[in-house]
Each structure stands twice: as structure tokens, then as C-alpha cells.
Length: 519
Image (cartoon, rainbow, N blue to C red):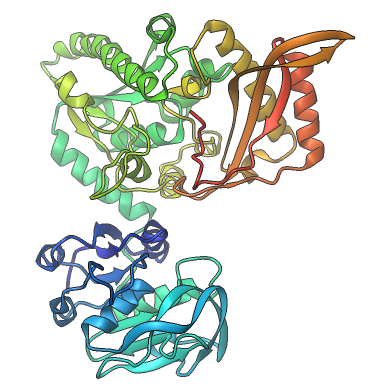
């Protein structure tokens, strides 16, 4: 039997990442590959199954992405979703054309045969559709499993060849039976067992880390966030005392965070920690810089220089044992890689200081044990490693810290204002049992001043924006509908307690089209 991943072939879908996640939620490992990858390369990965994603194109139009027919003759179980379903049908000779009735959003679907892919499905179910093209007849050898008013063939299968397809999107939560369909495909149709869970991830990474590192010394850049903490704990499990963590206080952390990180992390893991206060260096380097990408590059460069100094300290301490420092651990996640343009054809939305380039400049090789994981998977691994919920449950926080939440140039005064406002907001979320109900929250210092009235006097002071979002992995996010009473109190507290602020606004934009951070 094949030993490779389940491949999710991306045809430009909004939901390709989500399909990969749903496969992993079914305890099966998945990887995303571009539709431009030749079939021979896909098959060389020895895939256990292949899922063809949706996409914006129409299969019968010139230039539309095609699926090489030999993919369906390779003996690998294939599931086509939306455009992937249409591309499969088209490649196999079915009649695919503009739908008489386009279907978008919630669609009532009639199940003609509740078997195979649709085993356990009710006769009528709600599905999420987004198509103006329909499969009118199934290819030879296929049986029709479902139909809708606008899609004569809404689901089909050829069990003899292990080929399956659905017009709707099972990966979205708007399709209540969607996860059941994906699990049917993986476990019943493709015959795959559970091979992807926190324990398996740890076991696999520990083995790889030991093989890669050998007896060399390793340093890890610790930010205090979930990602770097879990990465460090995972490497520590693999190589123990060969690991030294370095925590850099760049002066752009939340109020009291530096001391909290140093105490909580060491207490939770017992890992050796070197703390470096480089706040003055970072703030000096950032003086007068407003452009967000330039800020990120400067911070990345400063991290390199700071780590070089810490590296020398570790080398001196390791020298007595004759061991070399050869590796750097980073908590890079899959969404970081994607946003930094790390995938085929992926746009560079924003650079991440921990994606690419640093190790070469530092003459260190890179260890990234979380590079293929989403945030929720990282948390599950952390819990399995015994890291406290206090650390695991922390909201994501950008590597460059408050530098990217201060729009415009950075000054010590602005950092202080933002730290105080952020502390009030975050503590308020904690005190009102809202912290764990949002995925990420923070405050942005805006580059505007406005007129206000305080103590019967005119003020002309700064505005801050509160940002709280709901998400699973940061790839998409919706704004959190926090109670008005809570927002009113936080706004009042910030204006009354933080000198220099006289206006508070709340960000109600989603990602996309916005990003979570403002910059």
C-alpha cells in the first residue's frame, strides 16, 4: 500500500488549505500541491489518495486547468470537489457545460444512493454550492449518487476504480455532513487508517531531529509565543541538554511579557535559557522607520546580530565538551510559509522574519519541526508534550511585536502608550471570560490625532483600534462580536487611564480581504 501523504491538488480554490485541514482532522496526513505539478511528480510522492480542489475556472474554456487522464488510471483513490469534480468528469468524457441554474450558497440536495462516498447520508441534505457549470451526465462506469435542481450529477462514484466526485464543498462547515463525506472517502473508500495525531507527530519529529542533529549543540530562538515554545519542547524531547534557548527582549513586547516568558517557560520546560535585553538596539535601529516591510526586515536583521552574540556564548560554554553549535530551531508554521510566498504561485502577502534566509547568514542549519503544521495542531502537540495551558492557550503574537501594531514611526513614547492600552484590553478579555473565546486580540496605535474633550478642555490626542478575531489557523478570520458593554468599558478605561489617547475604535473587518494585523 502507498506510504505517502494524501495530496490536495490546489486549482486556485479559496478552500484548498481548508481541505488539507479537514483531512488532518480525520487523522490522515495531507499535503498541498499546485495543479501545475505534473502527474508523474504527484505519483512519485506515493500518495495514499488524491483530492482535487475547487477553483474559479470553467473546464470547457480555453486555458482552464486540466487534469491529465493518466491520474485516474494510476490506481490511486481520487476525490474531486467542485471544479476538481468537473475536471475529473470532463477528462473522462462526461458532458460538462453551463448550468441551467447556477447554485451559490446553501443548496438542498437529493441523495439518490446513500452508499460508498455517501454512506450514512440522509435522503435530503443541505450542502454548500458555488458553481455556474454543471456535470450533466456521468462518465462511463460511474453511478450517480445525488442531484440538485441545477446539477443533474451532484455526486458520483466508480468504486471499481476508486474514483469519486461531488459538486458541493464538503470542507466548509456550511455543509453539515461534509466532514462525514471526507472521512468516508479516506477511511471507507480509500481504506486509510489513522496515521496523523499529536503522538505520531511527536514520534516522527523526534526521530528526524535526532538523525539530523546528531551530537551537535542547538540554539532556539524563543519569542514566548506558542510556536517557539512547542518547537523548543519538541527539540528538547529529542536531544535534551544539547539545546539552549535564547530569548530576545526587543523592547516591543506586551507589558510585563519579558519577565513572564522567562519565568513561565523555564518553569514549564526546564530548558536552559539565555535572556538578552536588546531593546535599546532595536528601538535605535527602528527610529524614523514607518514602512511595515522595512520594519520587519530591520527586526529580522537585528535578530541575526543578536543571535550571533548569543551563539558565541553558547559556543564558549560548549567548547569545553568539544561540541559545535550547528543548528537553529525556529517555530515556523505552514501559514507563515504560505503568506511569505513559500508555495508554488503563492503571493507574498507579508514577510515573516522566521521564514527563509536567516540560517545562511548565521552559518547555521535550520530545524523547523512545526513547518508543516497549523496552529491548532501545534497546540495539540504542546499539550501532548505536557506544556501548561497557560502557555499553550496564549494568543498568537507577531514576531516583530508591537512594531507592526504602531502605524508610522516608532518611539519609546508610542510603545509605552500601546503597551498600556493593550494591557487593558487583554486583561479585560481575561477578566470577562472572553480571552479563550477569541483566537487573537490586540490593539493598534493609529497614525492620527483627533479633537476630544477631557475635563472641559480641548484635547488633540491619539486614536487606538481594538482588534479581536475568530479563526482556526490564521489563514482566514472573522471579527469577534464582543459584547457592546465590554467594548464600552474597555474604551472608557483606555481613554481614562492611558495618557495620550482620546479615541478608541473597533475593527470589524474580516480576513480576507483584510489581514489580521494592520501594518
